Image 1 (cartoon, rainbow, N blue to C red):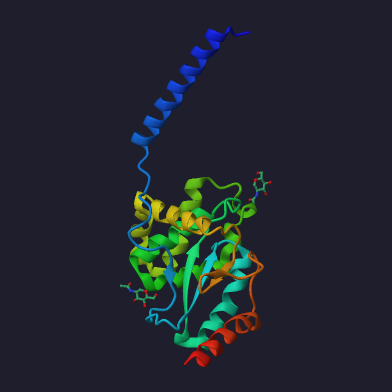
Image 2 (image 1 turned 60 degrees about the horizontal axis):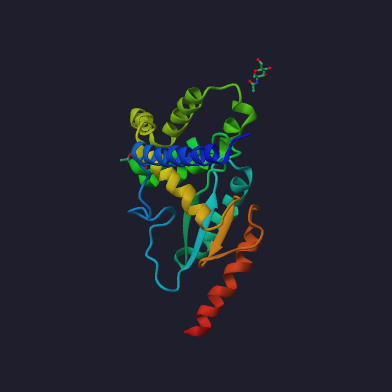
Length: 230
Ligand SMILES: *[C@@H]1O[C@H](CO)[C@@H](O)[C@H](O)[C@H]1NC(C)=O
Ligand SMILES: *[C@@H]1O[C@H](CO)[C@@H](O)[C@H](O)[C@H]1NC(C)=O
C-alpha cells in the first residue's frame, strides 16, 4: 500500500506525464483550424439562394443503404421544385461502416478536381455500394481498399484523373476536409444517415429515407406560406 507521500508524488508524476503528453500532442498533431475557411457541404444546384428559397441539408453516408434509398425521392422533389429549393449535402461517414471515411474522402478529392463530378460519384457509390460493405471487404487490406476506391472514383471523372485521385489520398488536406464534414455533422447533433434539415430544422425519423410524398408534405406548406406572405 502506498504511503501518503508516495501517493502524492505518484500524483504529481502522473500530472507531469499528462502535461508532457499534451505538449507532444499539441506539437505533433496539427489539427485543422475550425471553423474551416469554406463552409462544409456539396451544393447540388448552383442557383442563387434568395430569402424565399427553401434550404434542404442532407446528411449522407456514401456506403449507407438508407442514404442510397433516400436519394432518388429527394432528387425527384428537387426536380419538381426547381429553383425554389436548394440542397447542400454533408457527409457523415459512420464509424461502423468500415469504408465510409475512405469513400467520403474520395468524394472530397473528386470535388476538388471537378466539382460537377461530385454527385456523379455519389450516385455511383449509391449504385454499387455493396462492393464496399464491411462483409465484402473484410479480407482486404486498407491499402487494397483505397486502391479499389481510387479506381472506382476514376470512373466518375475520367481515366486521365487516376493519378490525381491516387495522390489525393496522400494529401493531408483531403483527410482534414473529410474530418470537417464529420465534425460539422456531429456538431449539428446528427448521428444517423440519412438525416435532413429543412430551413435549419431537423426533420423527424432521422436515419430513414423520406419518400417523394413525404417531401411534398414537408415543402408544399412552406411554399404556400410564402405565397400568403406576399
Ligand atoms: C467535369 O465533370 C463533368 C461531369 O462529369 C464533365 O462534363 C466535364 O467535362 C468535366 N470537366 C473536366 C475538366 O474534366
Ligand atoms: C475471407 O476469407 C475467409 C478465409 O479464407 C473465407 O472463408 C471468406 O469466404 C472470405 N470472405 C470474402 C468476402 O472474401
